[in-house]
Length: 128
Image (cartoon, rainbow, N blue to C red; front, side, top):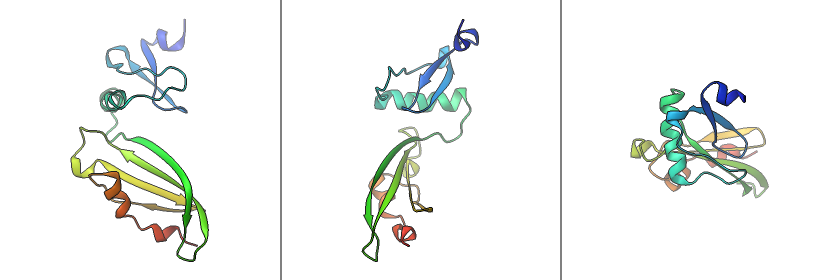
């Protein structure tokens, strides 16, 4: 008998690299292989995490990587994470953006949209 069955839980993949166990009655989404969860599944998983794992502020995290030109005109590789608390969150606090480059990090304020969260960031904190 597999561990998840013995404990009465089912694994639910929430990203390509991590998985969680939810109680059977709380299972709301399932991912097959590398297929990402659909938006509705993600939001149901956020709700289930609040209940099953008692997480206070779960976020779906979407990661991006790209090149950014610093104020000095130098290109640097930047990792950007957009955090989405889902449609049940306070609409003014739904999104947050974090960025890092070369050991430096900046975090934006909570906002209504990803664009608004990015606009309020201090991108110059990533400059050399």
